[in-house]
Length: 493
Image (cartoon, rainbow, N blue to C red; front, side):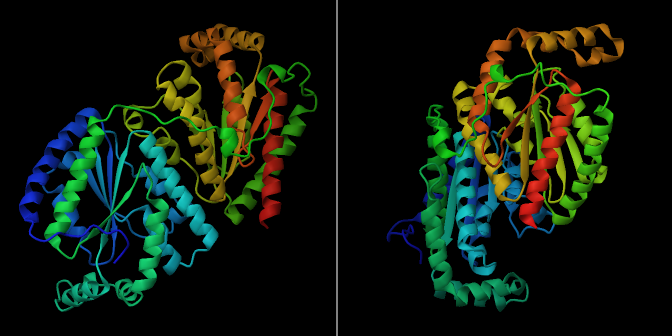
């Protein structure tokens, strides 16, 4: 048995108590939908501990339109080409819905340590990834309820034997199950360590003794009803944002007002030749990246009309179209708004050997969402840490993350706006929103300075691209990408 397991007390009719609580859970689902409370219920535990039965009891009376049951199996070969947490972030429920998980991201920890032989450093990194993932969700209003179903070694063996005696259930006992029972003490120690390391204030573990099935059912419903009721009745509050300067290794970067623009001009006579040289070099590097299975993200932000599209076009022209994707980021649609804001970006991160180019990014959280009041200011303030964590997760998975801020001055933007407005074939590029944003130039500049200062990390630094001269900007982007990729290839050979 594991430490601190919840165990039954004699003389109590758990069956009747469980029945009353199950009806309460049905009522709570409607309130979850009304209040847009997303709930994730995680079931982990020993083989034959009753996960399937308890999951069936949990969903029996619920509206199937508002819950989903997910059985987590080993990652496929395709899933292994992405960062570990991608498939879990993709699977989070919409606000107001319930996700029930038969095993979860925890299969990447204790079991992986024993069965896959991951190193202590890998285990530590994965543990931190899981804790970060859960904290980001609970900070966003998600409720995570984690159950570990516990049984003694002898009881597990007895249940396995019973399953094996029947031809209709024998298939349910796997070689892994038999191995786990034979090495029960080894697994128990690993599970205890995992639970101790990942039971946090925002996402605690509940270890339930499942020898008495009625007690297990009652305890499950008691926890679910209690936690969901408390979450529905609690006022919306946000934790105090952490100082990112203390949490991350940041690179010094200049303020936008200190960036020299006028002297950054490319020679028009040699521009095409230099562009061709750089594109050919980048094309060769793309082939090496594919062979070495190195994924890359190029993230572009900048002022309206600053030249993001032109720079992206010149980068894309050098790449094999089978190995990259350009992702334009618009305002989130209804489905995207119903999830954590990083959800839609996790869905688009590249697999190994591929490149994703983002035309605008997750940094909208601390710019347009912040300044236009689309998101509570407390949540925007928390985003600097969340974004740094997101990019760290990508970097630790082996991904190269490069970020470009395309910088122009206010006069150059006005010139380009006017040119677009007066040129029929360019008019689609200029909108009323562009003019409105221009009126808030000073506010946006302050927001961008804060963004760059707080998120230019050693693993995902910002490059400020002097963009008054488009030719210079395009060449600098290509040169920066090439230099970074050559460094990464050299280090990883």
